[in-house]
Length: 363
Image 1: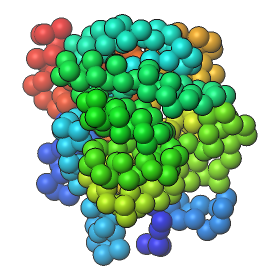
Image 2: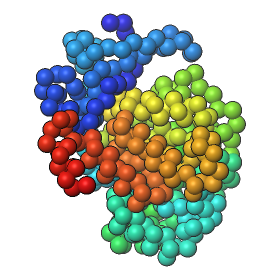
Image 3: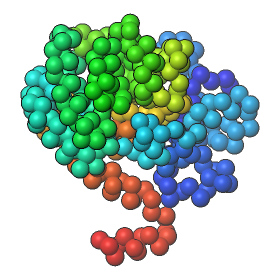
Image 4: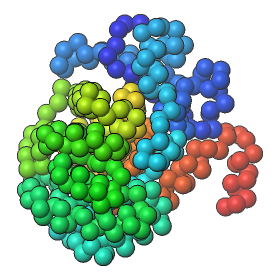
């Protein structure tokens, strides 16, 4: 087998096929409910020339050079923010902004934001992501004091109610004060690269961090974004950020990665990354996916208004589940949870087994 730079698991199968794992026919994907039966190996020859090859598990497992990358792909992920990563989770979006692309103004009132967040938990969300600055394409930065004024009452109100809260910010001071108010997770669209003090805050506070990829910054990110290969370039960038965090004292076990759908990507880039999501398990971290109501869904479906894109959002989220994503960030929690429950039930039925008749009876 030729040398390779990346391994992308393919031939993904659900829990119903897991008994074959012991025979070596299937390897577990990130220790979760899915397994894979082969890999695509990828090697960069030049910026636009990538050698691709499909390789079976027997050949991969028989080579010493494959041991480390296979271990990263297969190893069970440690709990993230107290959440077991052996099943997918729904992160509910709480934007306390007047101008977010989908729900700007809906929860600008803190009482409404807290009430809606608690309703999301009741509907099945396991993490709530509070943000006070829109990062939609073309958005202008919000003054730091204004961002704090927006997020702190909501973070505090949710945390005091026992809700697990993530703070969606790219500023170190906002991170620190939100954590003091009760947030448990940092979610940064700049992967701790946007503020020189943010990586130190994350290291000192010893909290889980979601590292997201963005090409450029919100005001300019959609002006002709360019990649040699979207999935591989994003992978490389996230790998560098993971390494920077480890060097700063943040262990990989406290990191999750988000490829940043819609953040400095064209429709084609987004689709390439979505199809290659299993690749990102090679970073050895849980994978977070944010596709909810995004513009690429509108371009594909013709749904002009973000709130009309729920069906497309569910389709994209389920595509993520089929590639082993552990956390999906969404606006429509109840709908997503219902879709996940049905997907999980179908994926878990042994082919030809008694579960088929049991499901028919319960239907």
